[in-house]
Amino acid sequence: MKVSSKIGIFALCVALFLACGFMNPQISEAADTVYKWRAVTHSLSGTEDYKIIQEFCEMVNKASNGRLVIEPFGAGVLFPVFDSFDAIKNGIVELSMCSTGYWTGKDPMFAAFATRPGCPIRSYHEVMYLDRAAYPVMKELYAKHGLTLLGTFDACTPEPLMLAKKPIQSIQDFKGMNIRTSGMGTQFYQALGASAVSLSGPEIYTALQLGTIDAAEWTNWQENMEMGFHEVVKYALDPAVHIGATSSKFLTVNPKKWEALPEDLKTIVLLAMDHARYQSALKMHSSDEFYKRKWIESGVEVVSLPAEDFKEMQKVGMKVYKEYVEKAPNGQAYLEIYARVLHELGYEEEARFYGYGQ
Image (cartoon, rainbow, N blue to C red; front, side, top):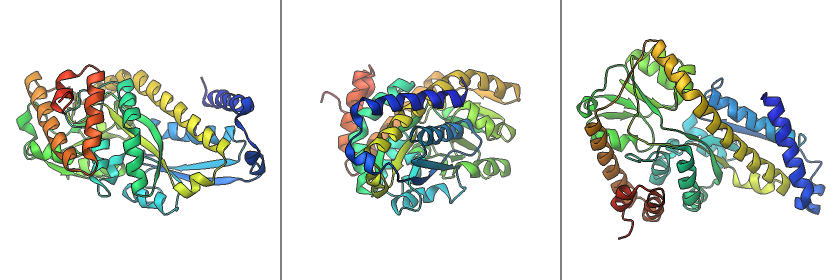
């Protein structure tokens, strides 16, 4: 289905929703006001991830009949990705779709939400289930630092890949490596004897090309190819072990700008977010195997760790994660949610490790 058709269907659904009694007198009073917003993301312009963001903005523009116009900007276009948090908070731009891994310097819990070393979760629906359960804690954390969290924008499943210039065939091979990572990747790879490097998406290609880093974690097969990483690495580790399936981006907004929106426009934004999340799940699952084959055809060798090494790395990751989150402000509240969700999803061993039933 063409993007224009999907936008038309979405706009019709929103119109029907609003026509069914959602609108109120305050909305009609603000009907002549045009709101112009800018949105930033860690996704690079031109990638499939970025196209989903463009589609989200187009849907909002169309469904609102031009009353809310959101202009998207890819990673690093307006300012470095790491500056996005303060830009939203200070009202320089209104909206962001970014991983919490970029905000680790603001609060240690942002790292815990971005990546979960040793996490057994591998599917999209499991990620969404966990995010929904953890939403109150996450929303409170963002509010503490001056932002409003609207929800999960999309997810990265089964998990971000590790791309390497040299083969990784055992847990011992991580020792001495320089690895681009995010979130709790720093603590995890340090526990394996590697050094962690923090880089935004636009910086990774050059760092791999120049040998500044030996390996990098970054999203899925398709986006990694669109960014050209297959040109500067020889190996791809699959699965990558560190993270498990995780949320890729969260939709956050400046609180004052959000409160200034009429209720019907808020509803349109939230419905468009739900649609974007659905589209991201479809596209990632439909394209994953196709682009994996293209990686292999390009000459990159896909490698996997021995089962015993994979299990050992999961144990290391779980230990690192538990110790880190327990020390973080409000970390215990999140661990209780995490343990309960793991139990509900059938991961009993991991749930008990994090304290479920104790």
